[in-house]
Length: 171
Ligand SMILES: [Fe+2]
Ligand SMILES: [Fe+2]
Image (cartoon, rainbow, N blue to C red; front, side, top):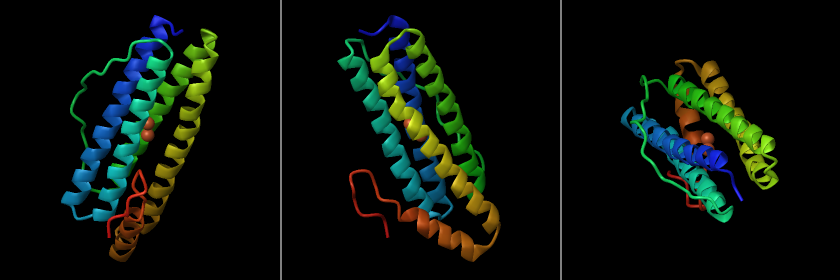
């Protein structure tokens, strides 16, 4: 069983995860337009992962006997045309998602819904990883600054990220 309140908040989280997917796809498009094809590939994979997160939550609600709802959201906004600036926006967004997951976790705890607590644990760990990954990329980008060779190298490294489902990374 799942309470109406937790069901509603989980439905909201589905929307946030789909929004994350759209935001990262918008970032992928922006990177492609400024010729950072590696970073573009990286963001496309990120977008796929967020879509999987949304469906994971949807499946949990259904399994728990609740009602999953898919809703719309506003257009994603990507500011600027700078690698570091855009990854900083991604980190800022991940921090917001972490707050949401923490909120859902405390709600599930208050309701003594331990199945939900257990389910949300995966997301707690995922958020630690997501923030750490974005922070590490930003740290590298800070060191690189405007060095063309450094930017070329990091773009190549970002492009080596394996796509969801194990597809070959873009060359
Ligand atoms: Fe996510
Ligand atoms: Fe994420």
